Amino acid sequence: MNFAIAVHSYDGAVVIELVGEFDLDAAPTFGTMIAGQLERGERRFIVDLDKLTYIDSRGIYALIEMLRAVRAADGDACLVMANPRIARVMTIAGIERALPFAADRAGALAGLRTAVSGAIA
Image (tube, rainbow, N blue to C red; front, top):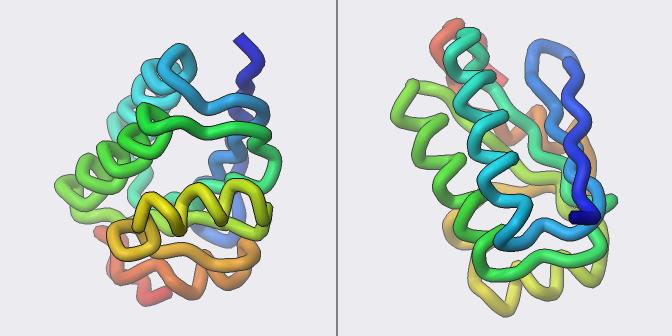
């Protein structure tokens, strides 16, 4: 599997940087990581797709599942999507109607709605 996840903080949000191929094999790893972050009380997520080289329908579905889980926990998530190849796939799939996205992390942070903490982003 050619996939990695880097997790770190950015101005009160959790940044999840996806690297490599986000596909059927990688989606469960991503889902487990999101569940762990939610169990720790995290509610604001920025998912950075810029270092992805490939995403398939299962990867896209994993992102939708993530947003549902995060919002069910009164949180929010926004994608960073400046990689033109990945942005094209997401546009063709119509994902921009379901998942908010921005061109960079600062824009994604600004796009997060009010989370459990009560902070307004």
